Structures are given as structure tokens and as C-alpha cells.
Amino acid sequence: MIESLRARWIFIFIVLAFAVIWTIPNFVNMENRWWPSKSKMVLGLDIQGGSHLVLRVDVDSAVKTDVSRMAAQLPNQLGEEKIVVSETKVTDPVRGVFAMKLGNPEQMPAALAYLDRFYGNTLRVADGGSGTLNVEYGELYLRDFKTKLLEQAIEVIRNRIDEFGVAEPSITAQGSDRILVQLPGIKDASQAKDLINRTARLDFMLVSREMDPAALQPLIDEAEKTAGISLKDLKYSQYIDKLNAALKGKIPENTIVYFEKQEGAESMEVGRRPYLLGTTDVVTGDKLTNAQVSVDQYGKPIVNFQFDALGAKEFGDLTTKHVNESMAIVLDKVVKSAPNIQSPITGGRGQITLGGGRDHNQTLNEAKLISTALRAGALPATLEQLEERTVGPSLGADAIRQGQIGAFVAAALVFVFMIIYYKSFGFVADLSLAFNVLITVAILSSLGATLTLPGVAGLALTLGISVDASVIVFERIKEEMTKGSTLRAAINEGYHRAFSAIIDSNLTSIAVCVVLYYFGTGPVRGFAVTLLTGLVITTFTAVFFTRALIETMVNKWNMNLSVR
Image (cartoon, rainbow, N blue to C red; front, side, top):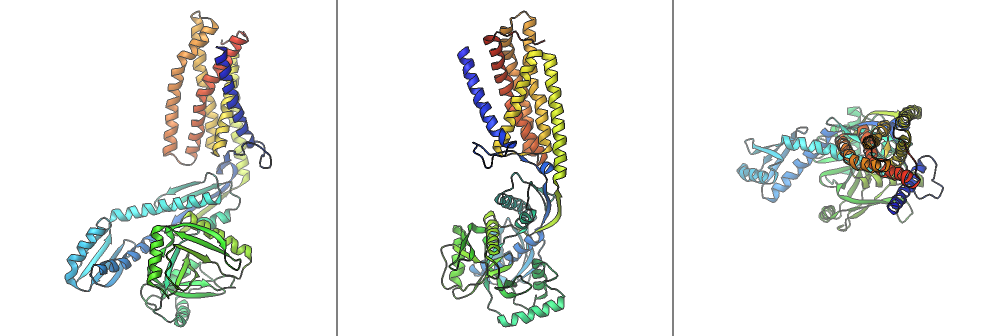
């Protein structure tokens, strides 16, 4: 028995040593010191402060973009089947409705058969008469498209926040088009917001040759004057939308105007160069696999990017088809460069140059931000910030103080009650509780978990629940001693008979915590994680640890413990 007891104590001391190693960084700064672990619990937004953002996903604009591309692609696809489409008109972009007029009305059955075969689950197509196809997005497809749009936006934001280095952010959907973002402990909220709000939409678009570039600027000046718009009074994206709306009918169909900031200009307002770009043959950046900051031959920061296999093929096909034409590299509707395609680019690699006019650090910071956004993923739609709140450190300090008081009072009541009611056995139970809290903090620290106020409540509740296991054991020991058993026999029998009851009660509580974590969000998950960790540890501390300690005191030290 002694050898078995010695093995148990060796295991207990190993667990205790690891618990101390992972707990100390929470109370002592180990950043510049040697220590096996520097991991510690992260305090949540409600404790240490941080940023609270509510963003709206521009779902309607994303649907409009998708409808416009579908309306531009279908005539080309039908053309490959020798079905000529003479005219395409989008009538309701929000609902995904457009019409296609066939060059030969007799080809209507062939067109309907083709669309049913390849787009039967996406589009509802009807013969509108006079050789016209009425096309509309299916209701289920449109609903699924919007849902996936929101889910994709959340995932991209989460990837970007992970790149930014915020531990345990809370990013959840609110309604059909809103996202709640909570960033605990963030010190530079402006940079995080800039990273989140960047659509980082990368497009490779051909420079249109349907209009003389010299005639484009006068049209822009006239449109600005007629519509009463100016880049000084609007955000760039708003200015672009209003300008192209004013230019509709004055520039060729399936083209759009974007701008490049001129080299040496401090902003778009000071100097910009217009480009007329085609909207049909476009390769998007959603097939990028990597984006890294590098330097060009002159030592200036650039962003190198690489496509996946499908993206490389599309990029290669585009550059092969349009050799000796100019292709614009467009990031967030801003033309970064417009090089001439001298030969097909089939390697799937390219670069974004950032221009001059700024110091090296400014250009390098922009390159880092662009590469981070592209590497984390492109947002499927633009974001609008609806709400921003900053939780100050004073509120966090008050929360910590009140939480500490509540947890201390709860722990003190439990400790005092156990000693008064169970005498020396109660003291053993208190040691078990202290060990339980120590291991819980160590595990949460090793995982880098976020401790919120609900988590503090879960930690305090763990004390009350975990002591229940000791109560069950002690009551069984009392029953055995009442029957006339010796103390040693009562201890053996008490732990043996109480073990199944402890396991059953803990399993049911653990199941509830798992359900709370799976279906809950934010604070509910924090509460579930803390309580779940404490419950799992209870089996070790209240059964394994207390039994080893009591058997040592009774069998080896011959102490006459009292349980009454």
C-alpha cells in the first residue's frame, strides 16, 4: 500500500509543479525572465476594456455585383453553344432579375435547355416572348447566397483579427446583415478597425480601348459638375459609385472608371489619374494563396502574390488572350498599377507596386496592411461601421475588484463551513479546493483562454460544486463509522461507495457545460469553459488527492482524524 501511495504522491507533486509553472505568469511578469511558460489568461472585454464594434455587411451591393457578372457571363457561355444573345439588361439587381434577347428567337428551346442543365438550381428562366429570356435568381439560392455572404464575412474578419494578434475576439452575427466584433485589451483600435474595414478586394481588369483616354477627363469633370459631387466631400468608394452613375450612357457599356493616385501625390484629392476599365474579363483575387511584402530593384516595398491552380489558369488565359494590352491591378477600387501585358503570364505570380511620394516607413506599413488583408482573405462585400464603443480601464478595474470580492467571499464561506462541520476532514477538503483552483487557473492559462466576468462567476461556482464531491465521501465515511467500522475501513469503504455517485453527478454537470458551450456565444461560453474545467479537475482533487492525503495521515502518520 505504501508503494502505491508513494506513486500517487509523485504524480500529485508533478501535477502541482506544472500547475505552479503555468499559474505564476498571471501574477508575475515573466516576459524578460527565463521561465518554462509565459502563457497566461487573457482578461475579457468586460474586465480589461477594449473595442466594441457593430458592422453592417452591404449584402445588396454584393448581390448586384453577382447579378451583373452573371448577366455578362451568360451571353459568352451561350455563344460557345452557337446561341447568340444580342442584348442583356438588368432590370432588378437586388432581386437578381435580368433579361436576355436572343439574336434568333428560334434558338429559344436550346437556350432554355442549356440554362436548365447548368443553372437549374440557381436561376429561374422563362420565355418572355419575342425571343427574350426572363432570368431571375431562385429564392432559395438568393437566401443561401446572403447567408453564406455573412458567414464568409465573419470568417474573413476573424482571420484578419487573428493576423492582428488579438486573443479570443468575439465575432458574431446579429440579424441578417450585421456583425458584432469585440476586441478585448486592444491598444491600437484605429489600426484594427482599418484592417477590419478594408474590403481588400483585388481585381485584375483590362484597360478599355473603346475610348480615347484624353476624352475621359473632360467627361469626368462634366459629370462632377452636373451631379454636384466632389472627392473632397465624399469617401472614395461613395465618390466612385456616384461618379459612375453620372457617367452612365456617356462611357461604353460594361466599363467603369477607377483612379490611380499619381506618384508624388499625398492623396487622391491632390492628384489622380482616371482609367476606363472593362467589367467582363476580370480575374478576382479570391483565388490568392499567399501575399508577402518584398522590395523591388530600387529597394521600395511591394506586395508579391500567388494564385492557386484555378486562379493561375484564369490569369494565364486572360493574359494570353490580351497580349499587348494594359491590365490594371485594382485593390479596393483603386488602380495600383496598369502594366502592359508583353507576354502570357502562366506562373500564377504577380506583384502590387505602391507608388512613391511617401517616406519608406509609410509605404512599408501600407504594404504590410495590404498583404495581411489579402492573406487573411478578401471580404465578399463592403462593411459599414454602425456603432463603436470603447470600454475604459476604470470600468475594467471596478469589474475586477467586484469580481474578486465576490469570489473571495464565496471561497471564504465554503472554507469556513467545511472546517466547522467536518473538522480535520474539512481541512483536507479545503486543501483540495485550493488545489482545484490552482490547476483550473493553470489549464486556462496554458490554453490562453479569455477570463470574463461570467468566467469569474463560473470559477466561484466551481468551489461550491467541487466541494460537493468531498461532502459525498465524508458522509459515506460517517455512515460506515456509525455502523462500527474502524477509521481505516470506513475510509476505504467510503471512497469505494462514493466514487460512482461522484462520477454520475459530475458527468451530468459536464454535459450541461458542453451544451452551453456548443450553443452559447460570448459570455455564456466563458462561463461554460471555466465551470467545465473545474468539474473535470474535481474528480482528480476530490477523490485522488484527498484520498492520498487522508491515507497518508491515517496509515503512515497514525493521526486520529475527526469527521464529526
